[in-house]
Amino acid sequence: MSPVRAFVPDDIPQAADLNWNVLRRGKGPAPAALRSYFERLYFHNPWVDESLPSLVFEDATQKIVGFLGVIPRPMSVRGEPLRAAFGSNLVVHPDSRSTLAGLHLVKTYLAGKQDISLSDSANELTAKVQKGLGAVTLLLDSIHWSRPLRPSLYALDAICRLRKNKLTAALKSLAKPFGMLADNVVTKISSSPFHQDVPRLKGENLGVDTLLSCYSDFSGRYALRPKYDLGSLKWLLDFMDQMKAYGEIQRTVLRNDRNEIVGWYIYYLKRGGVGEVVQIGGAKQSTADILRHLFFDAWKRGAIGLHGRLDAQLLEDLSGVGCFFYRRGGWMQAHSRRPELLQFIQGGDAFLTRLDGEWCLTSNL
Image (cartoon, rainbow, N blue to C red; front, side):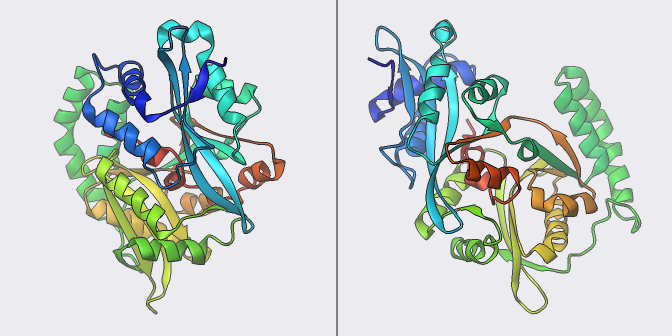
C-alpha cells in the first residue's frame, strides 16, 4: 500500500502542526487560525476537485510526516478548457526525510489528472526534485522587477532586508530622517527619474464584476489564460483581503479621457515599506500609462517601492519606466504531458500572474 494518500479534513490538525513546526518554526500545536486556514484553503475554495486532492505521506505508524497542498485552477488554451493544479506548502518532517517522502509526494502530484502542474514559488530543493521528474523551470517567469519610489528609504530598507541584525536596524532608525529629506527633494525635481507626475489615466475602485469583464476584454491576446466566474473571483479577492499576507490590497481600474476602460492593477500596499504587485492588465498600447498610474498611486499612499513578478509582454514597458530586474524567492516551474502548453508559457503567450497561483493564497500567520 502506498504511503501517499489524499488529504482529508480529519488530517488538518496533523498537517497544520507539521507546517507550523517545520516551515514556520513554531513550537507546540499549530494555532487555531492556521488550522482554519488549511480548512478554508484546501476544502472550501471554489475549485475543489476530489480527483485533484492535496496529498499526505504516512509513516509505518500512520502518522502524517509529509504534506503537499494542491489547488486546482481552471484555465483555457485557445478556448479549450483545461485543468491546472498548483502545488503548495510542501513539507516533510526532518526525521522522515530518509523515506524520500518529498519525492513520493511530488511524483504522485505530477502524475495526477491535471493537464498542467504549476508552481510559482518552488524552493531550491523542491525545484530540483520537480525538475528531476520532468518539470521545466520557467526562467523568465522566475525573474522579478523592482521600482524604487523613495530611493533613499528603499536603499535603507534593502540593506536591512539583506542583513537583519541590530546594527542595521539602528542604522535605519538613525538614517531614516535624512532619507526622508533626500527623497522629498529628489521626487520634486522634474528631471529626476523618481519624480511622480500626475497620471493621465483616471483611477477608480476595481469591483469583482468589472475585473471579470477586464479578463474577457483584455486577456484574449494570450493563448493560455485563467478562467474565472463571479463566485470564484469574489472568493479569491475576499480571501486575499482577509489574509493581508503582504499588506493592504489595492484594486484599481483605469479609464482614459473618453471614459473607456484601458487597464487595471492589483497590489498589496505596505505604507513605509515595499508593496507587492499582484496583477497588471489592459490594452497593450496603454501599458506605460498603467504602470505610471500604479507607481503614482503607491507613492501617494506612502510606499517606498514596488516589487512584482515579470510578465514577458511587459518587459519593454517596465524597462522604460525605471524598473530593474533580479532573481529572488522561489522558482516558477511547469510540468505537462502536453508539450504545447509548456511552449505557450515559455514563449510568453500565457496570462499567468500572481493572482492565478499559490503566491496570493499565503497566510499572514
